[in-house]
Amino acid sequence: MTTATPTPVLPTANLPTAKMVESSLDPTAAVLDEIVPAGEPWMGVVRKGQHLRIVDLEGNQAVDTLFYSAATMEERYSASDTVRAQGNLYLTTGTRLLSNEGNAMLQIVADTCGRHDTLGGACSAESNTVRYALEKRHMHSCRDNFLLALARADCGLGKRDLSSNINFFMNVPVTPGGQLTFADGISAAGRYVEMRAEMDVIVLISNCPQLNNPCNAYNPTPVRLMVWDAAGAPGS
Ligand SMILES: [Zn+2]
Image (tube, rainbow, N blue to C red; front, top):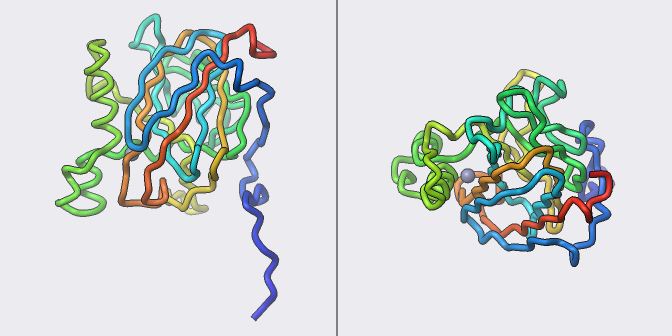
């Protein structure tokens, strides 16, 4: 038996790519401040120069997110272009979220979590069935959330428009052998990620309702969305 040193809450030594940066924006100056309930979708527009912050209110929540250009929704977030351009699999401060046309859609400007995934994809009725059990098929999923939000918006987009998404706050470490592992979350209550929009973007979120894996600690929880105007956002 050894007398182990307690592990820090956020061992950044284990996250060599993490760039922990806090935002200086004043929450009382936000022009949008909304709670997305556990398991629910959200869709809205963030204008060029505005800052969007997503706050993991209770910790270990996965926030599945897609971005589309507001000007033409054919232009959309591209995980492969983003990963290739930065030469790293994980998203953190400084990451430019690129579109399928190679344009910067947003840039992460603050991050107190340290790691966000863009490899693990979104849960669906099909993946719940394959990964867990046949009787999980009816369970609420991120893909259904995305489709519900798109249908409510009546924007003409559907299943074929769901590309590989970002999972904010989700920990999917890649092993030295190249395997993906859905690990316990590294986020905690109050940690957040903040992005500056580089173009007008439509934000499509599924606040993941998954109950079958540790990506959200088997317990979906609410998140807080905040938006600041460009004038109140230094550096924009
Ligand atoms: Zn999900």
